[in-house]
Length: 507
Image (cartoon, rainbow, N blue to C red; front, side):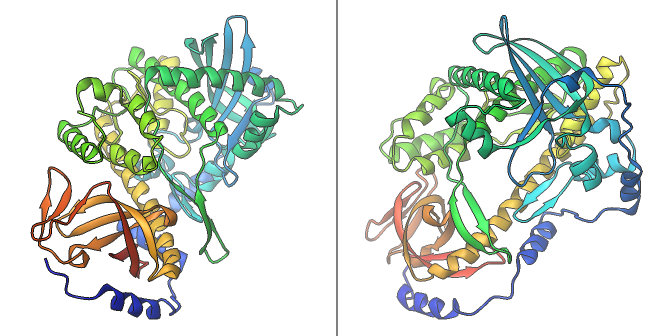
């Protein structure tokens, strides 16, 4: 397809238009994302009324768990504290207690709160806005494991050997009183500079020691650990981006992740033994067609990877080798795109990415409905009561679908903000990588702006281009120009439609 227009003249026009102020607000981005993905941020009156009637209803008698210095570790802006931890050294290794908010005590099956939570299935987190699964009276207060407040929990106690492998576990309900609300940054400082002398000091020392064992085991089992560039956005009072940086995964993040994984696999093991049907978080093996395409794309980049059964099983080691390359984030993204999506199911199919035979979600019942179902299932087993399995698979399929909608809505608002931020660079040149190839053009990721845009085929160098599905490339028939997935490419920022989150690029 021939090039019809001079891109430099287009860029000049967009430079002029970019100086015009836009009346579009962050609230407009929120409203559009919620509408596009069918997310309701209004509460039915019956739900709010029921939430108001909820009381702590905690007896004055001290619970055994209250004698332990539990702490929560979350982000600076978090308000819904699902989990608290306590760890100690034992004669045989480690003992870890993970207390999870007992949402099922307050949200009874079939109640107005439950029916609304079942509709929403998940909390939605967007920049400067949260649409919670439960009203704030519960999500941020009664159920949230706030510091120095007595809170109900469903606790799992796990015994690990000295190498960090789980030897036994048990579930029970109880009451905790968290002694501190810690942030990831605070814990990271203590991991690096030494644990401070506090009520929870010995617990944190044991937690760090156990975490180091779990991290080694993660490597042994071959769990996938992608290096993906993700923006950490700082906004001003108007919601506009004032600074973007690469989001860093701290050791403190990984510590909590590993402890929650341990709790989740224990919960999966428990329900697999005693429940008629399970609530599993499954991640199936990659589809063969996607693996074939990935293999071809990597070979085009000079990387020999055939996508054999052995290659797939050892993909975690392969990713580690790739991470030494300058284009590692893009290659990681291409590999991630070839993976299946994780979802919920009553049938256990294992978790390919985490390399677990059984896995579920148990640790976030404030913000995820499947976790609440797992809690009810565990409690019914402990109390030797019947659990209603009717329609469970359909419920889980709905949870998977709405989880995707929540994720896409959040990403859409982030893309809106990034598009607005990119306006100031209209007409400027950036280096990028081709992350998508279609008949109509190329999707190009621009690492410095943490976003991507479309380079239309009409704006490529003058040639007649044919889409090559096998090699994921646009091949010029006349002049031999070729643009392939993963290629580095220089582009100009062109037209930007911030409400649509679309950025047009020019070559």
